[in-house]
Image 1: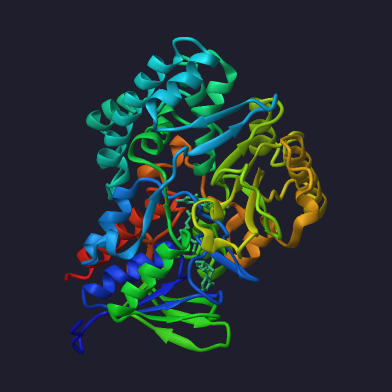
Image 2 (image 1 turned 180 degrees about the vertical axis):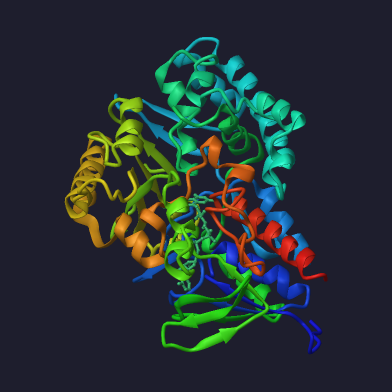
Length: 498
Ligand SMILES: Cc1cc2nc3c(=O)[nH]c(=O)nc-3n(C[C@H](O)[C@H](O)[C@H](O)COP(=O)(O)OP(=O)(O)OC[C@H]3O[C@@H](n4cnc5c(N)ncnc54)[C@H](O)[C@@H]3O)c2cc1C
């Protein structure tokens, strides 16, 4: 990479997926890029824990929409196949219902047909129709919403876009849409639960998100050998190859401003660094309330709706549990009530659903021989300023619920085989990564916080300050954040006249 003396300097605050991918893109274009990260290594919510030979992805575990990853690698002059050893996971999920019946979601059509027809005659044909509709939603959302940088309200709200919203079924709730295809409550669950990945309740999310079920079952759900963290490692090393400098254990405490410009940043130790362009990858609400001068904007962002959070357990076990698939969901209690408890009451449901990830099923290198590595996630409400939330008690109850439920499906001895445990609650997410309200997914993806209505990619007053990451358009999830990085890098290149 050849740089001249006039090359613009860029400081990126945060080495999450969004910060790293923006850095790699700008580095490749000849910008002099420095990334400052508060933690000891890159990744943010796509993080990794290594304990006694056990390897855990701490946040993201599901590799979906491979085309968006491939686009990033290709824009950086690399091939995804050379960077990641991807293995398709099928069945995608082992779903365990309250009555201990199971459904294995699979792309194998005859296996899927046999299971669905037993649960609800005729439902297989209807699923094919549901997925075909999902494919339309997917193509349309990517083209008309996700891949676009809305620079004015008129680009988002116009007769053409209104027609698009109707075709995207943006005004239809996902659960009521799914009930047009399936009568059995278990199938409603099977074809809507993925909305939780966007931090949303399927009772409130638009039917557009049926594209998630399409993409998982048709384009595939993958696992990069080495874990999701391989994505972070690959992008970081490409960024370094493009001349980007990374500094860890280096929290930024302030964005310095002068009139209509951001002039630099101040570090935890008082050092000041100047740059032509500042990019904030740290969570948006935090940036407005803690790093920028107070001008009323922080209050506006904080009044917005946030997605849910999670209580996490990372268990190193001295025994293997082959009965668990790579991705397992356990459903309990009233599906609708559970979402009300999470999203309206910001609490943990009385009978929570949860997710277990067992990476060693796909990749033996995730655990020492004869051992297992398990990740358990219980969706819960985010931190609320309006009520007292007793997180240690919630965490203890989550643990009891998971172990009790696993005992019901024959894994009664699991607790006594736990060698060590790590755990995150919403306050841990907040403290470790500066996530507003400890929300795992940032600003909610409800309709009024999408597209142009999500906070702007460039700060309205400080003309050289940009944002990238889950709380910006298009939203949360690693592939989506990669799009955010593409749009932010493009905007910077356009604005700085390269
Ligand atoms: C439990 C969980 C499960 C998930 N599962 C999936 C999944 O299966 N698949 C998927 O695609 N996505 C998943 N996601 C979502 C995905 O991980 C995130 O959307 C994505 O990683 C967010 O990246 P980001 O760059 O926006 O932000 P972040 O990851 O939040 O990165 C921001 C970085 O900024 C740093 N920072 C903050 N403040 C400062 C400061 N003052 N100075 C310096 N640095 C600072 C933080 O430490 C962090 O490293 C999951 C998320 C969670 C939490």
